[in-house]
Image 1 (cartoon, helix red, strand yellow):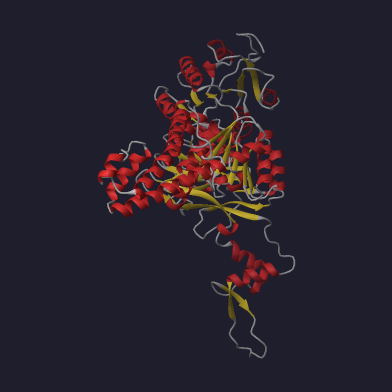
Image 2 (cartoon, rainbow, N blue to C red):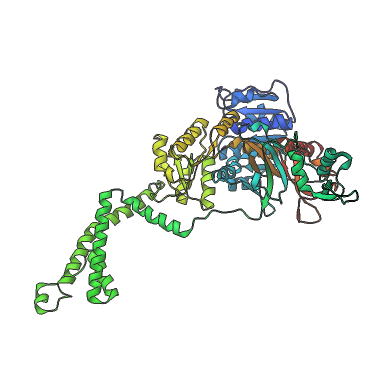
Length: 626
């Protein structure tokens, strides 16, 4: 590493460029987004050019310079020409370091656009108010919904205007879909997927039929010409066949080709489904959870025998006294060893409490109390002691139908919290006792398996055999894959979701495992950071396997390049679909706005589903012409 203050500044003076500070996976993806899709000059500031993703970033064609400084100091900012830059992205370092760097950059260039990564979103919102042109984003918060949805085997959703947009596949697609977002989906070859394929108009079906039948094409709406049956006269009426039947007939003809692979569509639901656990299940889990303190089979036998003896003695006392309240009172005193025994003089005088049977019952209760009281005390001390030591609780024997989250870093913590809020039981696994998410898990009462043992043993403690899903989101691809394979070996039915950065690695993963999903945090978050750097508001990201679809809302401002454009101008195959429009004169969101010729005016807002390149094209219009 170079010494403090030493770097490699740009060889030539540069201006109107974008600066990315960081050498991690998110910085790598963000640089690719800016260079490949926005085609803007990028200068990268890294702490060490030989570590992490910095060597790969240097090999990216289009990067203007890679500058090395251990910290983001005033000198480092001047070395990357902060005074003439258009935007700055801070995607590495702690929240405090990013806040300090953002404020320093604004001091050098008051008009610069600043996007900084913040784990504490509430603090980020407050810092945004201190910046003239800044946005605080969380990469983990952007990616966590996709991981949580994949763990549950259901589509991730993005909330827009009170509706939750999600991706539906094949048979799950309904007639009220907003648009087709992908076709030619082949799980064995994900390179064949087409995102936002070209849509066919209402006349496309009739054009195909006309080409198929020539001059004897459709003769009436909803049907096509069908020849009269045998024996019919020359004036017999021609019957119209239903269009659906004609489509089936055309597809069955030799040489007729159907689009290969599956299809995905964007749909909306009124409310996001939750997965609460019913109260009977929770009660059963609590009972089994209490039994975890009695780990020894011999101890459980002794305690259950003592409890049965107490209940039997209680029944004897109640039978003799016929007073339930007095029976409870004397039994509790006997359990605590505080009952007053009968004296010999009282027995001789006939003033004893109830005869031999009652005295025998009290003796039994007192002796059993000697067994039960220390165990109860030990349980209370253990619970209070673990809480004061700051240790999370261990998974209980009653944990069932839960999701195991491996890794309690930024992403793992977000995923665990989101699943917990949805009412899904969660068990976490973490090797570092100082990890960020340990305190969060303890506060929410989420069980955590701590330790650095073999995955087989750790997964057994996490109750893998009773789990529904496993999410491996540590920062290392190999560790995540090892956890997934070990989990599938221990429970062949468990669903696995793995965080993988490498696309080729993920492709082999999909081909090898069924009931599995792969996600990349940087791949999900980088488009949102790039769009924010260009001034767009990305509402969320939706996954189509390893591909990303962005849901963004754009405002048509005075002087914007969007003014005067219509849906024909905005939409393009593989790039952009307009799914909703909000006009300036009203606050109502029009879904699937049919008028393709209506031109945008200042104050209008459009909601688009876009690929990374498609959103980059729209942002380029905003930046260059706005």
